[in-house]
Length: 304
Image (tube, rainbow, N blue to C red; front, top):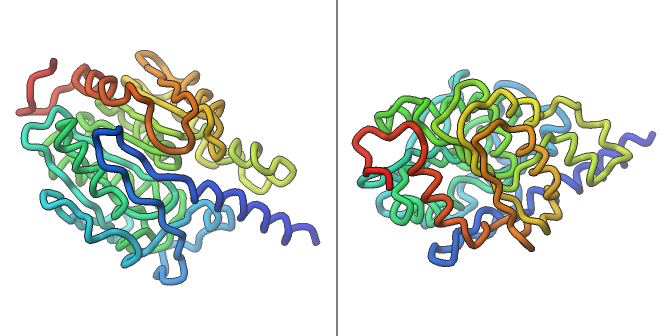
């Protein structure tokens, strides 16, 4: 008899996470749009029915909800398939003389259309070629979101980006925000990337549940998106930051991931920062990090 209200509470706390801000570039870059509310009613059938906690975790906005009219002129639409043939949608912005190639894994809300101006900033100001993709069930991608499906979609996105940019998958920089951080860590544990960038990410889905609703967190399996265990297998340079005032994914959960990671690694504390944005030193530290990675992009600008 207690299960129904408990699930309702769990829905509320994870929905709060989905309502967090998407990435805010530095002052010199245009801000990203506000995240969209979830809209799962229009999602077509996926390959597997999501579990209860997966329905709670994923908060997609499906096309045409979003900011599709804000796709930059030099940002192209890309279609590709996941391992189970689910059709996926992405935006790709190629820098003229890239110093790095980035796969960006977004959070658990919204869709790719939130990232047009952010991608243009990375392309023009950071000289990065970047692919932002939608997991199944998000935006124009087919299916319904599941954890295994999202990981498979991330794997497929890395393969597609390697093809588009003409680089090896090991030369790609993996960048994940919040839920996307868990996806990026999973990929990095499977095959070491050139570098790993994490923002506002969590140690595990269960840990987030323990913080927000400890009396019912048992509803989330302990191994759900266990990034602490996964990152122990990662061997590449790491750049990570987290806001000290993040009420959705507490600072301590991000630090827990960092502490489990191997060297070389750098952690930026964003004093007073919430679940979005970046510390003031982000631009310079980002530029230095990418140019200092051991694997250069063929034909890229010289490292400084």
